[in-house]
Image (cartoon, rainbow over all chains, first blue to last red; front, side):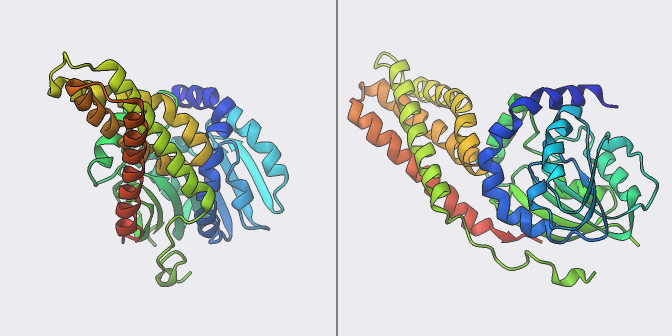
Length: 201
Length: 136
């Protein structure tokens, strides 16, 4: 277990919902649209305080993981309101405790801005995904547009101790991990985006 | 699943919800005014223009880092953080340079800072309009 990362997100659990209040409302339509793709057995990594749970389509079979027990403690109330099957487990994305090919889909939401070794984490997700299974991601990344690229690079070391990194190249990381990119859509600038990829067959 | 017909492929509308558009305008105006005030308070005509510009820029960005979490909590993350930090930087630069020439009046700080905020917001909306939608 990556203890520094767990400690960071345990610390942030107390104020995370307050800081994300506007963000979740702003992104709600695009998240709801992306999550509407869920079907079969779904792994949701990382579920955090469960702010995304209200956007899940009803009646699905979902396993939600997170490295932070305090985040998950907050997520449980939201999980209890979900109309389908939603199991929450404390787990490090780098070392998933699931058999190979055990999920039809993997869904992430602002996850790979924070996973310490993103390619290793994505490889772990590919392992548990069935061949041909879909990876659906809602992520914020770095930018290729000046001055936004500069600002994200400057802000990353400031925010990193209590939150995410803001200059990741997540699309490239998905490819490095062996996924096949199907679609990338910019939600805001070239910073907030949805990525749809599949595990090779 | 047929991945050739994925949802999200069509162009999505830019932000039109009044709460968020008004929030963007408010955040950038307040940030522009605050950065202008700080730069003008810091820099006086004894400074050279380049040093006033850099001091104003760094002071504005420092103030931006303090104020951004408030705006982010209310109106959204990247959609607020990026234009507001840009506003803080530009407003600080402009009023740092202005302060090195002569002390700006209070109405000039408020109007100028607010106008810079609105301009930076519109600039990011324009860039977003170009980048929005299918990237690959």
